[in-house]
Length: 286
Image (cartoon, rainbow, N blue to C red; front, side, top):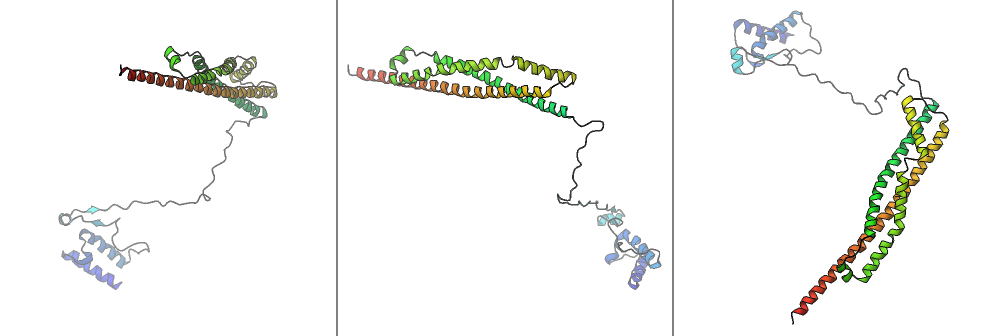
């Protein structure tokens, strides 16, 4: 307390006499607030708190920017530091669980018939997906069938017949004969896939689902309807599997026919070129 009184006396004398202070108290305009604060403490008007500091803080102190500013009496007030909120880190086990979903207000839980109808709708959508795959496979097989027929009708020209090897002709003829066995299968599949959507059973089922979509009334005897849908689904699965196997066979035979024909044409052109070269070599000596 005695030291604080001595500092107070020095500050008061310096302020009254207009003397320039040196040392830590030479802070320009900040000296007067410090002196007043010290005087209040000495007189007992201001009680210090544990968290308060007797030195000027960044929140209350007025600091000079440069000697020129101090000479001109201009100073800059320092803004308080930003408040940083500390985040509370929690482990996954401490995080609260999300609320359980609840039914909207005014809606009743689905009944047994509604759940059965949802199952039938999923079956119907699965059937429609199978029919889409069958239709795309039918278009691909139709183009492959046209390529097979064109390869089967392919004839050799005169030069190819003249210079072709008999072994190549035999391989090509053997590959073409296999087309007779696969073309009927492709035509039959294309026929079944074309008339697939025109079946009477399929039309009745489509009418049932269209009626429910328009009126919202569920049909009677859902068990019988489910049996019809399952039967139609199995029929579409079998048709799709058969089409995939026939398509693979058609592509394999078509690739074999094209390979043997290219081999025949290449060997025939080589033999023709060799014969022409041999004829020119003989003509040099006459």
